[in-house]
Image 1 (cartoon, helix red, strand yellow):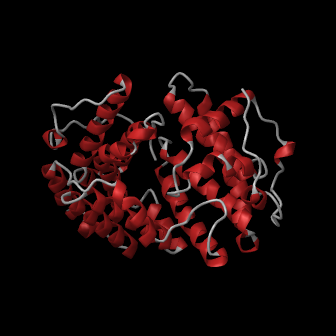
Image 2: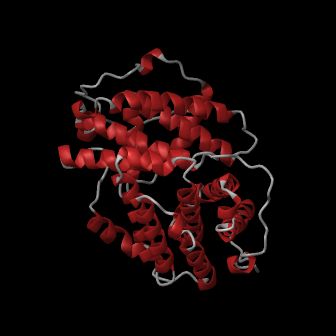
Image 3: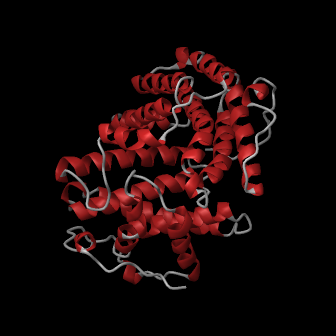
Length: 374
């Protein structure tokens, strides 16, 4: 197998020279294996991120070229490639530890780079942002990755704002304002309402029961954003999608100490809110699949369905009994959709089920056995 890149142009040169931040550990001093080459190739072929919007080409050109000079980015790429490969081929269970090892090396190097954030060049910051996005997608495919997912989403937002405030843009990625995002994506998003109003009404009733448990301003903001998305789903998938971006803005704008309390495993009320976030992701997945129909070879949304079910069960089993009662319906919805999509993946087609999510709500289908914890 031969990996090749296009000849460097002005943008590529700008991304690979004049960096003032020395790598924590030079890649030239590290040895990489045949498995690592497989992970790198799989990343390029099937596992690369599709964010930021409008920057898809960078993930097959500028990002892999720059990764050879950027340890935290290279290890993040290998970690995502290994994780996605393992999920796509369940016989390759031995790659899980390799993915964890690469993720650890990436985080260690990234942490050192973030300590010098104010001294970073625009090239350095682009590399850091690429690493954050890569680790977001890797966490999305980890059975215990929910907290890491939220942390790295926050990292993406904070680094993006740092890039915009210092350099007014990125050489590697296209960074849009909210208004530009709306203009770019609106034509591609379905304007139909979610067809199952009954299941959405059930979710709204359930999330309203949580209101008295909320304490911090961040949890109230998260609650309001999620409830707004549920309401939007009854009118327009497109409106719900843009409401979803408000969730990420809330994560990104919290003070550090507030965010740490927000994501703490002992914060049961917020854990329930995260389960509603997973429920919303699940309800929107069919429409996101239709938007990305031309890219079905990259089965990220199918794989994500399987992981989302693990996240949902893990949250449920970590809650006290009085709060488990608040999310029974949501766990059942996530489980139902996960099994439906994994079945569709197996047969490589799209079949309509005879049972709608609203038909399984309240049927007590939750397995009370042990599941992976978050």
